Length: 286
Image (cartoon, rainbow, N blue to C red):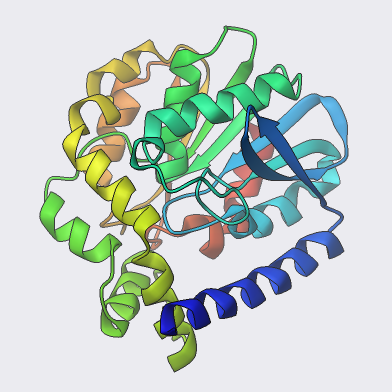
């Protein structure tokens, strides 16, 4: 009963988020991929220079709103996906589907079906890891540039500790996770929101993803295979980030030969929410 109530409350939060996105000029869409439906927001603009955004773990497309608000003046066509199994992009309760590379296949199919070409692909954290998979799988003219925001791609040196942090089991764990995400001031969610997040973040969807990723770590995380990414790549990372720490960002930069690494000083992991203007400025210049 409690789980149903918390999911209902989460639906209310999602409704409020949808209203905010529509107020920014976004159009809600679903795309059918042979029975699997993916949700995305579309901001109308120049179709010759589209931006595609992919969010991170325990998140949804709405989290990219602050960066998008800063780049709307560029009048570029913008697509913001809810990753499979997140937000409005629901997947059936089939364990096999909750895998990073499977999601990359689904998103690549969606991008192809939307007839997008020469896109700039922007991914935060897990979305950055998925973006790498997409680039390595895609045709040469599909993605023109890659922007990685605090990206995954290399196993964390303290994996077990990160698992405990990224999959909070209690209200206190939720608060601790937020401290790892935000730099200067970590938000303090109210009691109801903390309980809702614990319930949602411990759903079977995230459990499936966690188990599949741990079991297939060597094929999910690219490591040196990132050398196959041959397009211009911009990496933005917080120098205080403990989830995707500076040493791993430097290694990713070293692997991707056409990459540029920019540090967001004083920031932790949620740079897309804390420093949207800095990221948008770097994105526009890139």
